[in-house]
Amino acid sequence: MKQISTNVSSPEFRDETVSSSQLGALTEGGTLSTEAKPAYLSLVRRRLWLLTAMATLVVLLAIIDLSTGPSSYNLTDIARLLWVSESPIVLEVIVYDIRLPAVLAALVVGAGLSVAGTQMQTVLHNPLASPFTLGVSAAASFGAALGLVFGVTQLPSFIGNWAVPVSAFLMSTLAVLLIERITRWRSMSNELIILLGTTLVFTFTALLQGLQYAVPDRALEAVVFWTMGNLSRVNITQLGMIAVVLLLVMVYFMRSAWQLTAMQLGEERASAMGIPVARLRLQTILLSSVLASVCVSFVGTVGFVGLVAPHMARLLVGEDQRFLIPASALCGAALLSAASIAGKVVVPGQVLPIGIVTSLVGVPMFLALILRRVRG
Image (cartoon, rainbow, N blue to C red; front, side, top):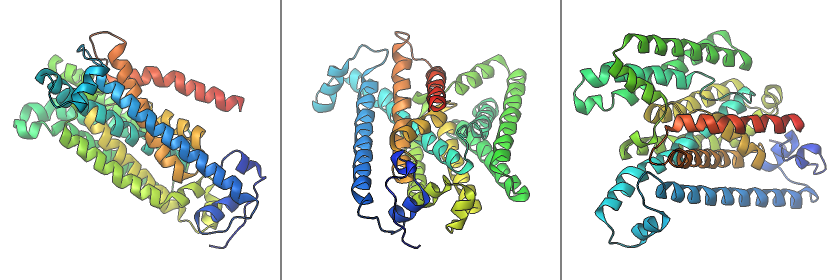
């Protein structure tokens, strides 16, 4: 790609967004002018410091999350357990077997949903795009309900334990493949893809309600509880699967960071820069949907993380995907960890379902982001 110098005085540079000239100079081997280089290096250092601060915040929230719960063990008891070899066996069971998997699940699921939402918003040029907007979450909820009603009761225990996440993943994957086939067949625009996803949301929601109407009361209770979201149902094996998928998808997105950043300039300008827009958009939607479906299939419906966290990350580091991808993962992890803490302290002695907490917290945060954008 040809070398292009950057104009540091441009409004795009001051607002920390990426113009086409900066994109070529900064990410594809171009050269910076002498005037632009100090400003760019200062911007990079600032964003790196922000990422470091966000990572520190995530660690602190994880430690606080580990120390909160119905049991009367405080942060001092947890620190003593982590640093001293001898601790009460009850404390070890509570921390390592009950709390730690849920804490790690909050980190990886929050990061996964946020990264998926970030890339959906990027390639669809729609601030409301998220795994839930495209019907991934609704499809997973319906699939999980099928697994709860038929799989758990009809299959042997060693298979029935996997019936719910497998059924949820298969149904959400089916929704993604349906979107992929229709978009290839009709060459749909970004707006029509969002409308198609909204249609799938209503379709799978109606199917879920019909299933709830038909099943016995005991199965209905299990289905309703699953749709509320629960981090404590994830075991170490499932947690490892989510982490592996998250790592692989993030590696792909980081390798495509320049192309994804260019997508923010518009599809016509991105195509003029030699980027296969249609293929990149399709691959990004598929990978984001797979990542979101894996998360939802194990923990249930968790709302607003994939919608709010990407906007928080953009406010902090801008649109450059080299910084936006890790920032969105950290914002998602921090948001879900904070929601997990809130769910354990709002009602003493009880743990609220994580889906309820994220919705209650996400609505005012999203309204604040909308008002901030309007004032801007």
